[in-house]
Image 1: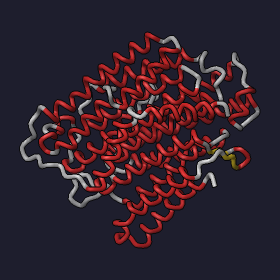
Image 2: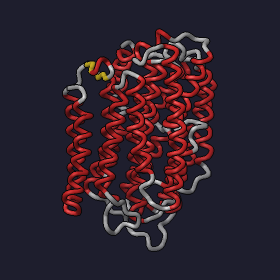
Image 3: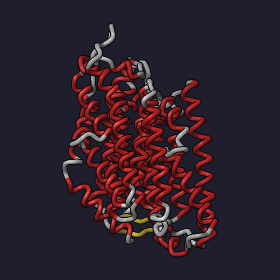
Image 4: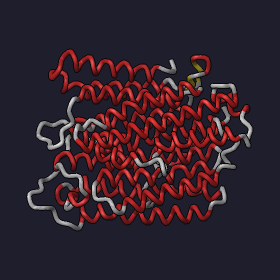
Length: 472
């Protein structure tokens, strides 16, 4: 059954909340293992029962392309769940509370993200997006303090506005085409209609919110800083991947005929996004705000893939998103261990980490260099493919600008490396301890961010699957 992975995730979400309600504190030691079992079960079913299938009158489809995206969501969520014990120990300064509710909401947003991939009509796409987004708004307000509340309110208000823009855009598309099915809409659209341009602008605003594109990024720094760092990690990785899924569905399945003509607008949007993210990141002192602007700049690189309209261009974006999820989670895993055990969130608080835990410092340095795009790390390979898309489309000036932005990003990532390796630890700083489960997750993402760039199979297979998906 093609929808079985999503059903498993939803059933386990209800199971987690039931265990938490019935057994209370007695269940807290079992909630994380049960959640891990549920995610692994969904992943296994997805991999071993992945055939091209249409369900619900064509509203739900599964295939090879959907496998890559859903596995990305499952891996990202699994790694966040593995890190939950790192945030719930009794002796932590910034302890995560209500683990059962946290895991339940996390699984619901995962189900929404997985449904996003397989949606084939505008209604189910919108409902799935809301299922993926609203639980994230709840998670971002988990810290019930002034800062957490402020960030969550901004996320909620701007998110509601973006949702309204998206829905209004979908309404215009339906008025123009008379269709709700995504594959059936594109042949009905004709270029030159003012209503089409308005719909595209409204939909771009809604998607820009999810991808944190300029100027729809305003919510991200405050929401990232106010949320628990575990939620910040999920927002910067899985949530951005969900935004890319919506963008792929809309701009390739709805507006595929016009995407080349709209490339100059994409180039300007990418320029503004990557430049703002990199320049403002230089000025940040808080680690979570720092990573927020880093995520904004990464979104600017990702949308370079929209300058083309082939399967190879789609595969460049999906491959880079996969690399980004692994690399970003590797960085955040180290930051979570640091923040939860020290209670400090400033860049200066990383001073002397190489002496307190050399392994964590090394992985954090590799992750930061991966985000900057230093060879031979997978981040460099991913950026190379994206820059190649821009070059093939004739935007050589944009490639030069993207390379310059990557140089700026290397400067501010090196700020963290300097604190870890050159500065000495502050008086009273204790060695950082890491739990076995966290070490396992950290090893997995480290292998991923190192290995993805060295194995060409992944990029080539994604390209083949993307070409097939585009022709569907």
